[in-house]
Length: 327
Ligand SMILES: CC(C)(COP(=O)(O)OP(=O)(O)OC[C@H]1O[C@@H](n2cnc3c(N)ncnc32)[C@H](O)[C@@H]1OP(=O)(O)O)[C@@H](O)C(=O)NCCC(=O)NCCS
Image (cartoon, rainbow, N blue to C red; front, side, top):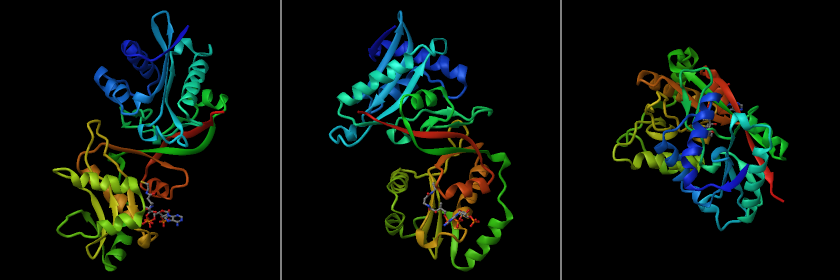
């Protein structure tokens, strides 16, 4: 067995390994050559990667991808990220994964990293299929699937679990808005609240909303959508026109997935049923506009999980956020 830095001459062998194993496992999505190049090799952070292949003869039978985010290169307090580790099924339990991990860790240490993390913050997250569905997908696994071979490999090599997040799924033909949501919304309407499509001629106060929600990712998502020549429709909760709640750009992805950026309500109006009503309106809109299913993930301590379970979503996979100090 030879262990070498990844080079482009291994691209075809690596893609074959990825797609063969994706088919056997039925979890991660296979790629076209163009798609794989775009996702991995042309990823802006791949340039600083600590990526290695394991070769049996000339065959690529193992791969690991560690990265340092471009934005973190000069900040040595920032960790490196492990974004993929894969060994061919027929070559498992022979120490190949452990050797690849060791090489990746040594290389990340050489790049000045004091820790290695596996978490969606790496920005290189792999698309996957919801088990037992007709190719219902999610665009990016947020961390390590619990009970997967890679989960146990990392546990056995001194990675700690820092937290869990759950993936939620619902086929939208099963979605119905509960009567209680309509009843509560009637009461909220009397207080001047409305849930409707954002219309810049009617709604105001987004700048104040950004300050109040204190969430850069949501702010970026709203600004990005509004910067498009033709922004995607999105829902807002408003009180006499002032925006106090938002849910992300609404469109159907090619797989049939309803795109989902998140939901947020202004802290001053939380706890009165607006978050639930907003999310339920999003589900109804997505169902009526041709989306087949919704998938997303959220942390164990996020209150929004109650909303998702209430709307009928099922938890279909748990992911572990993992970290190892590099000593
Ligand atoms: C999650 C969020 C949108 C909920 O908004 P909200 O307007 O407070 O929602 P609702 O009043 O409709 O409450 C919905 C449910 O959440 C749960 N919940 C809300 N606040 C809660 C609290 N303080 N304690 C416990 N549960 C709470 C409850 O189950 C509640 O339903 P119930 O009151 O019928 O039992 C809001 O807290 C928020 O914007 N958080 C920050 C952004 C975020 O985390 N978004 C989700 C990830 S995409």
